[in-house]
Image 1 (cartoon, helix red, strand yellow):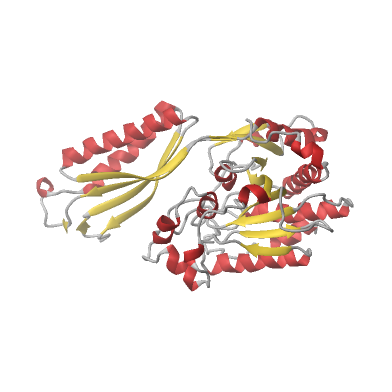
Image 2: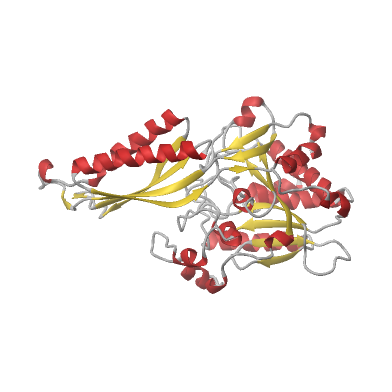
Amino acid sequence: MTAFDSMWASILDVGRATTGGYRRFAWNDADLTLREWFTGAATDRGMSVDEDRNGNLWAWWIPAGWEGDPTDAFVTGSHLDSVPDGGAYDGPLGVVSSFIAIDILRERGIVPTKPIAVTAFSDEEGARFGVACVGSQLTTGALTPERARGLRDADGITLAEALTKSGRDPSHIGADPTLTDRVGVYVELHVEQGRGLDLVDQPIAVASSIWPHGRWLFSFTGEANHAGATRLVDRRDPMLAFASSVHTARSAATLHDAVATFGKVRVLPNGANAIPSEVLAWLDARAADEPTLNAMVEQISAEAREFADADGIGLAVEAESITPIVEFPADTRQRLQTALSHLGDIPVLPTAAGHDAGILSARVPTAMLFVRNPTGVSHSPLEFAEAEDCHRGAEALADVMAEWVQESSADRHSNDFFTS
């Protein structure tokens, strides 16, 4: 068993449900256990660990003789939380690979000339509190502390309450003014969430961009009543407009060559023999460019309103989060390709999935590596990557890391990393 395999096996049972999927939600027991695991993995490697004001974990390899706070660091990592019944690879593959890449550099006898950090960003999936990338959004200032503290889970518990229960101080959350000084580049390795690599029979790819995407809450409001005793003509059933809107989302996505999904629904009062009073439905929508995304969501919203008006019910549409397109800097992307040139032609692929790298790109240079997913399935227990490809991914990350941390200071400052 390789070091990667052993490390991977050590977390496979954490947060696993009877479905075979994972329920590693922000600040639940599984999340806290993985935080302890992260600290142990760093300590085993002689790395110091910090948890920042937003709950993000940072494990530091500081070069001998380095004085003062870390600056211009090569940072890598991902996240450890999951969607409901998610797969094993989304997030943790990047964190495990980052630690293994550290091991590979040391086996090669490489001594870094600048700090290296492995990160685990908090609440990337947004499964518990409804907003994705909470840790990185707070850190970059994209999410305000006031809004974050007030986010609630399905049980009505606020993020502030969850932080307090876990021993954190919610009054401390907010933007990190030292981010741009500490981070020279952030490179995130992730299992591919699609079949792009499988279709071209390649194990590794470099990301070109992240599609613009967002989440919208559709609140269909009707009138609760008896499912048996209420005549059809007397009903104000919000479920009908919602159901029609699901079909509209699919049709609109097809028309715009994009994707749109109603994947989360809450029905009130949620009784088998009761006409609903309200249906809360969350639309996830993504497209190759922002005008297309806006046009698609406008079409879905307009048609949903027509359905609601026809049935005499109310409808409110609220944008809960919108992330613009992210084009990874061409020079940063080229450095990854150069570092991996010994592997041959490396595919360059866009992704429709959101990532912390996309959030951080507003403040620091970022890039991504993808590892082949032969099924293309993600956010599901069926998510998968071959062990051999995972090993290749960790080696590729080590190659990129080595290229960055062995350069001279003069070389570093001769590049303009903020052009793209």
